[in-house]
Image (cartoon, rainbow, N blue to C red):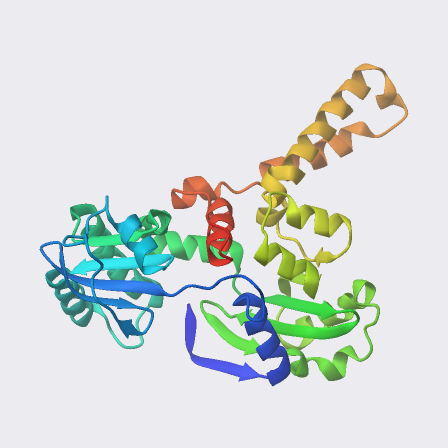
Length: 333
């Protein structure tokens, strides 16, 4: 996934710091709680850490099970709790040492760890709370590779910019080569080619053109008001991104088919189907003689058919999963 010769170029420290603060919800009122980790001996906690501190096991939790882990997390004041039998941890370390190769395929290496954790979760020797995290444990290397190839095609770039009024708040450009992500760059890498870009709702095209010349053809460009993005991270709601796009607080250009088909709980796909129904009704009314409804119908159908079924590919809906993760991360659940 990440090239062994990863290149980092043109990153403004202020932009990088702003992006980190935005994604980690720093400076907000959202309550960020630590995670807890327990090492078990046949269910009995022998070591318990909350955050960076070694803590005593609360009364009433002589054993940690799937049924009691949620109550223990509440007693410790944490939102993520991992508990593992000492033997299971030893098996994971030994397996990784045996099968992990320096410079090997990182997705294959990730599969090694995921597989061992999945086995532990299935047999009860590893407990993860909240349990929605375990959904991703069904992934294997080929599936992760197919997902990456769809979301981030080879020989393309992904662009993320946020703006505070008309000034750049944060900027990130990722470039993928023939296989792996090869470059992590910032606005300084394209600044000389971009020049003036205000207002950003129009000038973002200059950024796209510069990124294509300096890095690679963009497969996805995300440009948005910092406050709009912060709202989506702090208080995620269904259809929020679609509304921000309609209000031009966020611009996604280019918008790949997989995103267009999934925005706002399939809002764009449903809109396409409604348009298609309208076209077919109009054609029955004879309006097809006045408009080229046939070509429009073909275009709408092609957009519907381009939809990629990520749920079938991965075994779960990644966008629903992401929404649940953001809600959890922001402290709303």
